[in-house]
Length: 481
Ligand SMILES: NCC(=O)N[C@@H](Cc1c[nH]cn1)C(=O)O
Ligand SMILES: [Zn+2]
Ligand SMILES: [Zn+2]
View 1 (cartoon, helix red, strand yellow):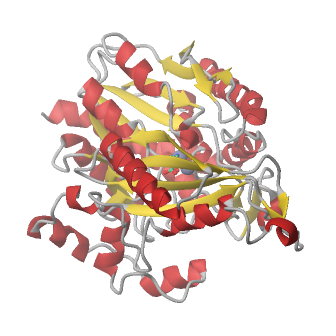
View 2 (cartoon, rainbow, N blue to C red):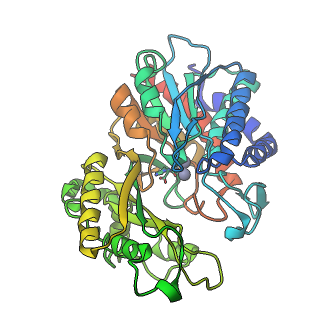
View 3 (cartoon, protein in one colour):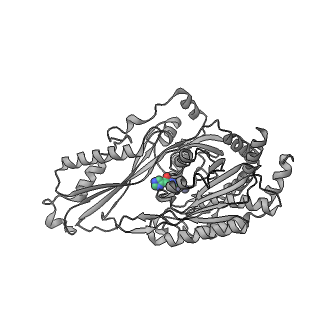
């Protein structure tokens, strides 16, 4: 509309402020659903949260479809039907641009005994923060989008863009099946989409941000199998090749104490740093001391802000996550585990190619294992295989994002990248050819994947306003062109 901005947005912002307790309550209902995708026992809860999402969309007049995405091969050898992907759309006006919003409603695992201060599945408000698994990753932001739509409807204003939603339940384990669905629906669901926006990451400081890059990821399982049963270390220690000893040699060969990946070929494929790119890091707000305090570490692997951010965003990293089968309870069991599975992942950046990285890692591990001269068996498998994503910052989508941030937060957004992975981001951009932007609302200290994950009430509510303002700015973009 040609109405002044404040005439359109003020009633929306007022509604959001006045209904914030309902919005928080709804987030509580969503957080209470244990939709942890890492284990099949919780997949029923993924179906439940997808149904709850569909119900909200239907209540607001949207049409929903549950798209089948096949079966998942599980680590125990069985296969299981994947929870479907929720595709939704609202009434279409050919004169409006079409925005497709992607999000996920599955979560990382969480147990109170991992060290949470509150029950992870009971949303708990403390000092302005809403604690609970999925509060920021990614139930809070998905709900904020839906609340932005609700706000337009409740204040009797037309949503100024056509809206589509893609909501999935397997993001945290790599979004398997969604790439294929994207290809299948490229000529149908995606054909009239102009823009794709994702809000599944966090700011890097107290300043709001727009995100133009994410790292890719490959996840590795290294299995070493030896004796038929676990053995007594007093009887067999010193006379058998222990699977765990092989495992330590394998995992210990992957990176050095500076964080440098030692797998041959990996670092050589990283895109060189240009002077222009280097400049982008200078003005980013990132307080090293505050971050050290927040996560209680004495130092980082790098010494200055630019190097820390580059290590997070534009260089690869390798993290070792765990060893399945290793004795990990408290106490002092004197066992030789018969079979152990090491788990690690490599975050990837332009111009790395996951399939090449996976081959390089397998060859490296086989070489190290051969030197062990062990009779045990080695098996290396992979999952996730997600490419990095980088957008063009000059895309008009970023102009609308900038304006919306300015309207709600009164300041320019920081232009940032993200160290974590949205597996489908690159796929959306490459397969559909549509413009993709990330518009985060989570705070820099939200602790995604950690104990005590949270989103602040401020970010959740201002984030809802940001999304409402973004619809408006996106529609103006088209008219101004
Ligand atoms: N908020 C995005 C996110 O946390 N994504 C996961 C995706 C992933 C990568 N490997 C397995 N899952 C992440 O860990 O980055
Ligand atoms: Zn996420
Ligand atoms: Zn996540």
